[in-house]
Image (cartoon, rainbow, N blue to C red; front, side):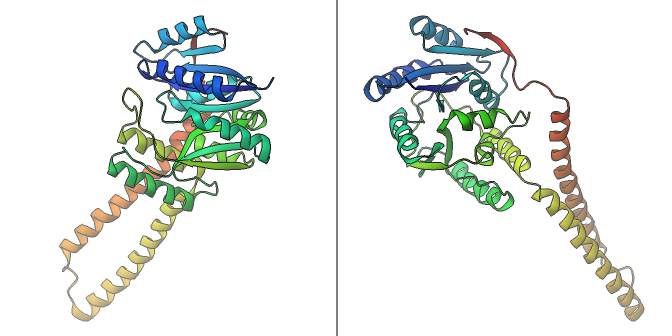
Length: 310
């Protein structure tokens, strides 16, 4: 019998986790009587009763495995830990808040089996329930990163996808510390089909993704899969060197013709501030790449396990 590994990253999901388990079991009993399931719940340093609920579920169901981190390492680390632990013929990543509809799982499985795909991903065609400002910046981000990167990023794509064991092994072979899974999924290749669905709001609890966290995650994605910002910084520097050279020529000519070399101090101060700001911006871009390199060369573990039941 084939097996599907279901990986669920959890951070303070004590309200949503029981509801998720109930729903996924319902889908299994209705649509997957011919398929075995394996649940891998990853506790990403939760401060509530998430771990206790995982233990309770595992005591009742031997299909439930759990991994508990020593602290909060982030969703990317939790997904990677789950992928490493998965033993199924197929692997899927889901959120405990039921924003990833379990009802789509059978369609995703049939698509892989019958149409020859290696992966079936999901993407939201609407962002109903999200703050408008977040939706606006999300659309801008995808437009920017697709222009900057050679790796295609699908607008509205979720981490929720079903993939073959071969694709899963390819992903976990990339052991980089700074992880951006949406990019890694595209980078490894393999044939992927996208299923579209309407956005679903959380079944319980509150989102852990603030605007600032999403902004940092976006920067992570850009620096992980594009060097265009470095090229942009160099291009801006070259342009301003040419402008400065032309302005020097203009000032010399104006001084010789008009004999007034001291006018224009206000505009000069504005130019100095603008150029200084661009210099700091460019240094900041370089600093981002340097910081990522610094973290990679230290070879710190992606996650540390405190407790697990397998």
